[in-house]
Image (cartoon, rainbow, N blue to C red; front, side, top):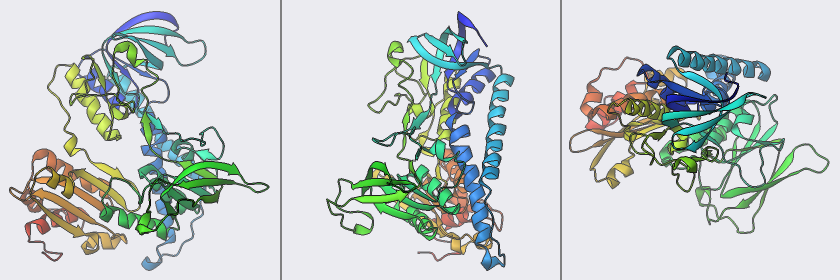
Length: 488
């Protein structure tokens, strides 16, 4: 640790040690560049510490408990007891293992680590305020910089995260007791994933969404099984409303969340919403999950001449380069989609471009996954997007209810759908809803990246019995010779 006010230099400065930043730093180190990585908090960023990893750990744990309690059809009768403290300890152990691994990998690849907060002084210099009392600061000069400062939860009016009953996703993942009731504001992927976790822990959950359905941006046929499963878990939905305030309940425990009708006439299922209708929902806590915003306002970017858009995202090209030629931006701060694996890919690209290698990112083959029950995963173009792009499309679909392996797991809801160019069979996109969708989508991303055709996917022999056979069968269905489902 550097103490005092000194000036040092580096070839590559990386600001932020999340999945985008630490990958950029490690890759730059592998390419024999002198690298300094500045992180103000924990290595691994939001994803490893407060997002992807801890949430998936709790999703897995609550799935195990729920599956055990719901296995009567398999001849299993159980009533699992939830030890939330033990569950959180296990989750924290997973996080600690991964974050400590990131630090070790950085050091093993020659990355210099600095704990602190960086702000630009000009386009070749940052000022780093070191973490910890009395640790001082230093001026760091760089040849290239990679901004990887990530994102933070959006806060809405009257729902400040410092107020005890109001939770963001980070706080929800660290609760010490299971709330009896919970209002979730926002039916996007964060809200829906955590609504499922708490419902499986026994919490009464109500989700408020200003739009007319869950998971905006996803096709209805993908969302339908997720919403049905959520309702089966006892989750209630209020569509067409925005949370406006909350109050303590006089003389009673908990809070009352107030929601007003959104500026729209219809909600889910076409139900008419009266303009003067107001919702009042009682709950122990309220979880605000209305999205995330880039952390770009703490960097003094204007001192370096780096430009952002109206939402605060840093504009970049396919090489992760900003408008300032030697400054790069990767991960959430560089814009949608805000996905850890997209950020890691951008980190690789930035490091390789800095080292003088030809590298660029093809966003078309970047998959996305929602870890709801059942999971949703997509990659490439949807059918409508492909048609809007001028393709004559052909599609194939295979239901998991026709999959032997899905039936043996007791989870056969959903399907695999492939979209291809009808002229030459090239795979253009895919969407999956069902068991292990997040794992199955990788094969289809590879197909798009390699320029594979439906014939290529169908001719690849898949292990039996596995869920992956559904991918092969969907390709066969598009070709008109599916075996285990009816052809058109």
